[in-house]
Image 1 (cartoon, rainbow, N blue to C red):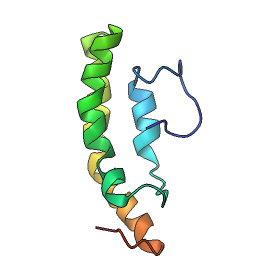
Image 2 (image 1 turned 90 degrees about the vertical axis):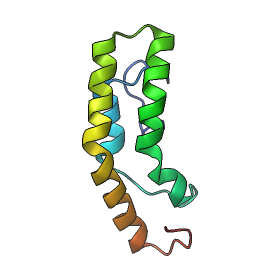
Image 3 (image 1 turned 60 degrees about the horizontal axis):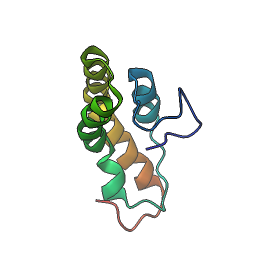
Length: 94
């Protein structure tokens, strides 16, 4: 869930709407991660963000914005990830 190049503070407990959009906006399938696990990324973020923000004292409205981005990008992220995985020879594709 690091999302490529470092962004923001680098604190893994701080997932701003921009960081979430960056992570889910351009899914890249890495074949060393099982596809079933990669497909769970939006759901994992949706569960992790409220916990992480509570631990960091982040305001509820910022948490709500980050969750809204997850909800907006969830289906497209999974579709694009499956499409990208289909181009390769990934035996674990669901």
